[in-house]
Length: 115
Image (tube, rainbow, N blue to C red):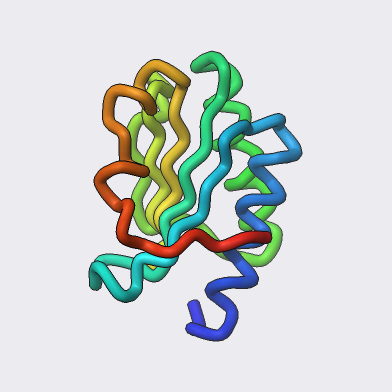
């Protein structure tokens, strides 16, 4: 993924998540606080079924552009689905799991990105 495209792709991911009614969607620019990625996208589904639907929509939309995650975890339970696109890491939670792990608090120094 080219660096100048990364923010645009992050915007596509947010749009795909929102198409499946993801809530509390948050994009963090973590370039200044970590070298593991450029952006974290964090969103929630009210249920594990909705979290899975959000995952499916993101994968479907990005696969149209021949972009596939390098690694995926948590799809079977869908309490915390992690999609690693290299420069972008997507975290899809059910509400309870998101509150428990509080990634926003852990990465609070990272600036928020609006789309």
